[in-house]
Length: 192
Image (cartoon, rainbow, N blue to C red):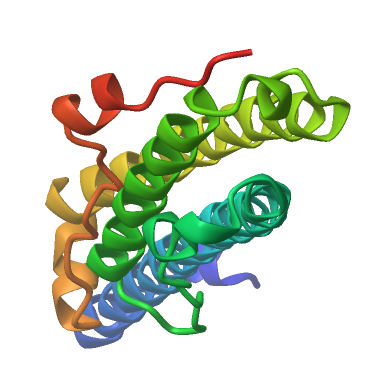
């Protein structure tokens, strides 16, 4: 005789314990899945921040080369050109934004000096470097857009229930956007 034929019944305590175990298992799987999703978003934000670092480094390198070209034409104006800004690892987002602003200011100084030397502006090296700066600026803007997009997705997850519970439990906080002030955007003019 089978259990159905004997009208066997399970003890209600076992039913409750099995239900609790299933609910606990579902919660653990959900928590791990949500935690992994948040970790992936953190990695994406960090990867895109490294894209900004690369763009700032390229920009710095091109500006340094441009300074060398300008120095050859204006030896007496070296102090006007540039205080060298060294990009360091582990700079905060605010420091990176400040470095970006300082490079904008130095680029303006270089362009002012170049105005005084028409032969410099017409030199092939200078024009090549101006094009390189335009390319680097485009790369920096693309890196900034990607970073800000990833930060937006991450921040949205932090405020969305129930993911916010996991994020709070892990001590995750909102990330800042990499912003360029409107004034800074309008000030930089690259003449080709």
